[in-house]
Image (cartoon, rainbow, N blue to C red; front, top):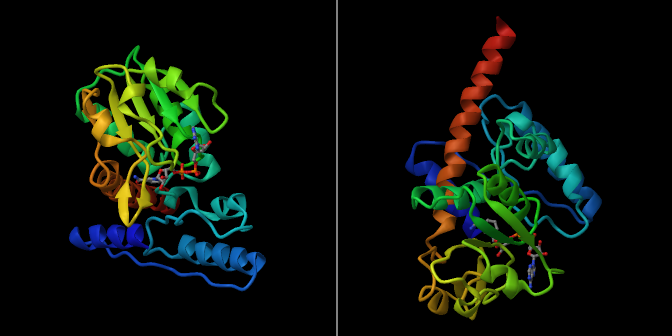
Length: 246
Ligand code: NAD
């Protein structure tokens, strides 16, 4: 909810009308049907330029059914299979905003990705997996780690760039890092009422050359980029309409 409220606030700040559609239902089947019907209505509404679905979905609601329902032209968080496929092939499409934010962090810090060893921890379809493709496209040599990876510390120690998106507080510590490594912490966890990332910031900042804080790092940039994706979606829909009407 906090995440959605922040996005709606960011919309309001720049004059974009955002709204939150809450879907209810007693069983996963009803929830899924209600959710896909709500997405259909948004797809058909010409006043709506972009749609995001707040994850995680309720248990037993099928992710595939939900992402398939989104019009790829309104899929500003890049979760529809068409946009995921375009990313894999290196073509223009919508990429997930969080993965985009991690890339922007690296770019805007002037860090050279070409030839760099990058480790991405987490392989979810919305964060880790797309980011691994994006970094490979930027000429980094990418190692994609996950919950079954053996000797995670060994992989992390070799990396020039470490992106952590596992949802496990304290997963990466300063002792695991190569001196001078760049650390992007995507994780958002609540520990004893405090929001923390996946990286032990205090030990990591002593070893890293650059590190993103949580809160205040990847999250706010993700929201800003989501709005830029929304603007692009609106422009593309206008172009598609003009093409159709011509
Ligand atoms: P997810 O649960 O779908 O995926 C977690 C991934 O981490 C899995 O691939 C799993 O294999 C891997 N993993 C789990 N434990 C591990 C371990 N011990 N060692 C190595 N890998 C491990 O989560 P997600 O949706 O990808 O989100 C990841 C984190 O990023 C969460 O904390 C989430 O809240 C946060 N997040 C932040 C933003 C943002 O804008 N900053 C956006 C989306 C998600």
